[in-house]
Image 1: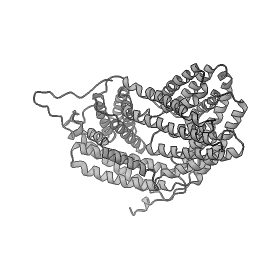
Image 2: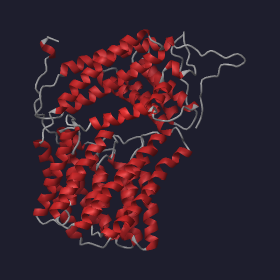
Image 3: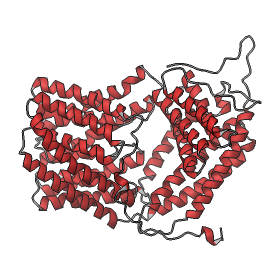
Image 4: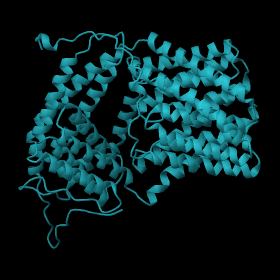
Length: 578
């Protein structure tokens, strides 16, 4: 490590892009799932309140309905637990806001509570890695409730409405398990196969990292899926096949890539799970996966009470004094408070819009935060124009208002995966139309306040991000380097161990490489921090991928076919259909 070529250098502040953050990308392959889920989860309570003539209560049911946006990439067993936690977190934040609003009308206190809630929600979502839409929905609901008229005696009934709507959202998101139980696992494995195909067709660091991340995500999805089924056992073989296909060089890369893409298409479909070819002439995929890949042993370890306690302690440590998540939470707290107080000082009647705007900006580093600032500002300003055009239509009848909100809820999720600003064009009119459920408001006042809140919230939010440094991002890189070196050594030592131990060590190494790349990318987008060991990161990634290649070549042929018990036959490889 004494060579000058790998000495760390101090990162320079990168120029902030203007055009790249606004380019449209390809939509997610599952964009329709959250879009349809939120429409179904919102339609039931809203149409019920419409029939009862109580559309003024929609804000409380919408809090529960929006929980349907979470967890769509998770297997159903974990999705059920995650959605339960999201509904409870949503209710807790809403309850805190409603009680505060019923006890005080001080704008200073309300803004302070809103900023504190936003920071706590941001830290919690980052620590649990809940995924999109993250803390933004929680902050939107709690901040809006802070400035809604409220009496203390009304709070229990309003929270009951939220819980009821949250139960509907839970059923909408978990209900498809009755039809397609292994759907999320199949999609995760299909992505791993497609990423492996890209790696084979176009070898390079970018495709190798993407393939490693996709394979790691597929293993994690299978580990969290619950008890093994014939379909899941077949999916395990496919992930192992994708993992092995990433590392060796194929004689005909184009043909191999096409074959992997064909497997991905069949896996994503509704037919039987395809069976991959055997790993080599000496071995065949059997049914003893505890011996072949050790995934059942890992799944059992995840259910161990001691392992769960260790996971909870690790979660608490991730929010401890040295956590790299804390500076981002502090940015959220300061930025939201600054935005709220600034709008209140200028006489804006709804400073919670500025709080939500600032809260929505904060990403893993300042460069990504700048990108989100551009996207949010552009999307909100265009969305205000859409609201102005749609408002007369929404005021024709209450049913028209409900249908407009449902339409924009669907459009937001359909567009946001292409780019955040495009989704914000639909989110903004939906958020403004929610105010119409209580009573009509002057259109000019709503539009003016929203434009002012958007601009001030974006300016205050990004200013806080620029002023609050995150020097701990470099420390995360150093810890990830140490963990990768340790995982690489353990994978090399496991070469003489049983296949299950080798597979476990390989998955641990893959996970450490994914974490190292994420930590390096996060730190590279931060300003005002100590030197980054960029060359050491590159060397560690190269060494890790070489180790993965070597161990993958030894893993497949070492697998042996399961022995048949006396009086029985060896079962064929599972190929169940859903």
